[in-house]
Length: 353
Image (spheres, helix red, strand yellow):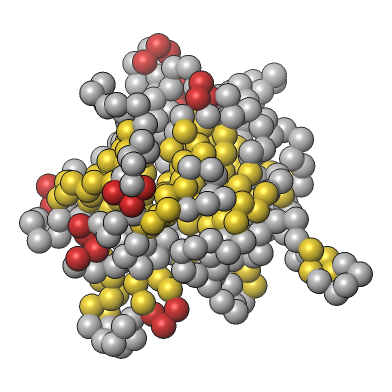
């Protein structure tokens, strides 16, 4: 299902938007109607932050007060193992957009990109020139491509190979003048991957930043690009060959072209992890220039068995703040980790609403 929620309260001055909530279940078609518009012309490559919008992740959803509405499905569903990135409004009258990237359908892996444009809902619902409610709609931003063989028989690709379980992230440039979108690693029907690609036009065109990054081939890693410093990218964790869990953390300051491995983080002493989240944190007034903060939380690990075989998948309930100093003389010593809470304490009970 794809559920859009835009709750409002108070006057227009304190009006707040709430982003879409997505899960990986199968989406129904829109009663046989094609809702995907194969046109990328509307896509504005210069995304700007909303002037009076404050995004609140999941607020009011627990209380059942968010006014959820199911949006039309697309004929590219059902699909799983895809990436979903929330973007700020690109057009007047819309609350936000959601990019759906790649993923798996049956035994086929895709590299296409779709955008869900979500109008304002609730008391500030968007209407067209005739006064009718504007409906959420899907737009195809970039079609699936398998590449073409050249005269030497080599496959030439203009974008990343179809995949699932990849890392993905997006970050605005200073002043909100542009947006960089990244995808890295993942797997297809043949192998896991260790490449990284970037797009600066909302997913229409992609540039390969590194075909064989120094970190091992893996799927399900965490990837984070830093707002205001979108050229800084961090990758952590994942699931590599022979069912081994990754414990490493790598950082790049040139959009993924080159990488430096950081010293083993404190959380790696217990276990590696896959499917974690790695999100940027706001800067602090006391920070020196070049100091960044990120939050790594959750993910999965394998309990028992040999390597990742024969064990049980378990959820992690911890959260770790990473303070990254880009000015550090030794890049491997640039990060420090602080535990916000761990599964050995209350398993996240205090975080529940």
